[in-house]
Length: 185
Ligand code: 5GP
Image (cartoon, rainbow, N blue to C red; front, side):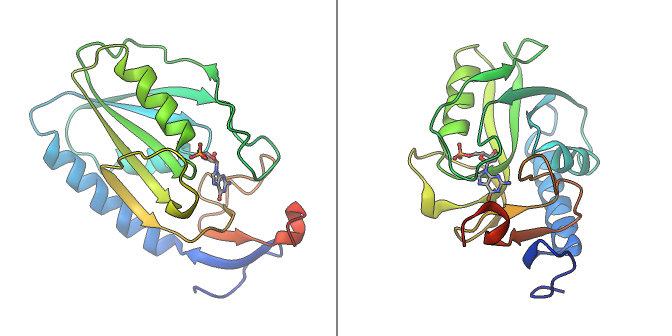
């Protein structure tokens, strides 16, 4: 399926539904193993990581809970402004808990770096990071990813939760958006 286009705005499919499903299952198993005997609290970064969280948590076999945080990111653009601020804070306390941050994609690392510092300042028992995608070419701040789905090239991708102007989140695969859609051609 890779290389074919199944949507008029998608240039290429980078990761098929099947590839994602397999990898998410593997990550769920790994997470379940590592946190055996501990209460795991998943912190999902809205809105892009929602689809990943929903699939991932169904492959976690130990007791876990989840909460959501929203951070201002690209808006309708494809370039990071470098400005990071909280749009919606967590509902529950993280103090003394084992936190796993669930993120869709790490690009410059600014968002994750901000969330990590925020959560660490609230005295959790531990903090780890789980990201579906990593675009290391554009990193500005170094961040450690404990559980990673896929490393991808420096292309703007949509689908499986990832948007452009709030669209394409519902695509079941991850694809490269045609540059003419965002004026990047
Ligand atoms: P960072 O702060 O690491 O630069 O960016 C993280 C956020 O930027 C992600 O959570 C995501 O919302 C957005 N982002 C970065 N690269 C892409 C991309 O290729 N496609 C989409 N849809 N969003 C991206």
